Image (cartoon, rainbow, N blue to C red):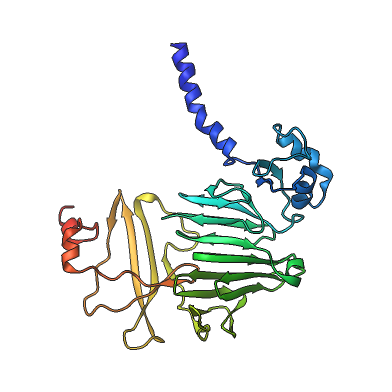
Length: 359
């Protein structure tokens, strides 16, 4: 009986040990660096801490390293990192579902929290997956599903600017947040094929944007701060609350105002509610069919009670084109309703009339 209990205890501890070995449970101020040709422990320490003086601390974190001057390319090392002293780098701070990282000279492997990425490294997300990169200057890049992003070296004088980064968006969507220090502004360059966009935050302030790249076009939306987009010899300035679209091989379209974000109706700010009577209500904007510049307010509400979902009634009348804005200000169009034949083949929705009859 005791042997069985010991075996069960050992099996229960296996997932925790594996997670720690993979880097999921790193202590704050540490990360996983992949050794590149020519790396030494002193050089790695100077890169992330600003000085090689503490190289022995990094050596103690990696008992498998026999010679600090003879590191194997592709080897993963746990290292200390101080963002305020580090050279330009990014760390995987959040991940959900299928996320891969390419840390040269390694090929694509499953990413783990704490992975450190430098110039020419990349991250990609799969279906219904997401990831967040935290840069050493305080800026962040959030990637949605089916996205591919690379870190690029900033050319020329930009490479010497500590508060300027360059990110290449190959496909998918990336949300960028900048936090400029009190003494200097911050800027990030976003490369999307033949188009280049930038986002800037004044000293002591923040900036936020959303970028999406597809096969035939790229789009940039600025929520805070200011930016610009350039392609085919044309440059368009973007202020807060504006965006632009670039067709493949063409110039950017003139800046357009973004739809306003939805206004929260319930719960009120600071209000506490139990899960048995949780209600979310908001007022969004529905685009009128006759003009793109005029929007009509529309209200929606969703509630959950004892595991069931209460659905709002549909409005009567002709169907109109709608765009809903997220809490950050981004807007999107809902999917069009399926045909009658396709709806008949699908199981009833929790909000359909047939499902409500049985409840």
